[in-house]
Length: 148
Image 1 (cartoon, rainbow, N blue to C red):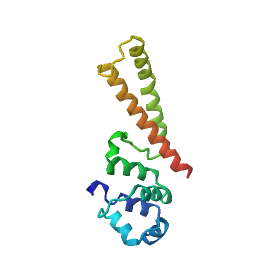
Image 2: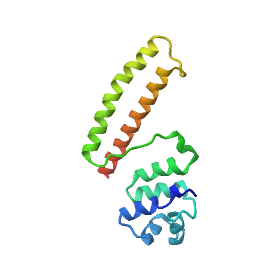
Image 3: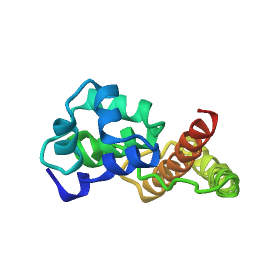
Image 4: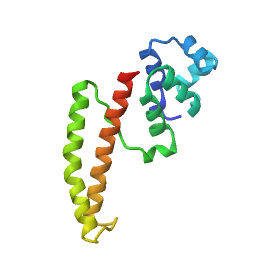
């Protein structure tokens, strides 16, 4: 298992103030198995990560697991999680400011009939939309953590 995948599971468990024994019971696994997961000796199955995310109140753990420990992670955008309510509001403001001109650009490209996925203008617009998407997704995950 990649070094990148080690200890994130443990960090989320400890942040939730759950002992390894308590977590193992919640996850219906042995403490030894949980230790192997947390120390990077064994790949953590997706269903266990899902349960960890639920029990540890850490939906970002599931996102992180998919992004860094799955071959499908390359399809997920990078997230920059807000750390405060102010960060969340600022990310939303930046997303809005980036999205409005980008939508106009896409509408012009499509309207011109030159909508070609290899054109620089189209590629730039799609990259900006992916960036906005990541900001919106980050704020959504942040707000879900607040509601839990």
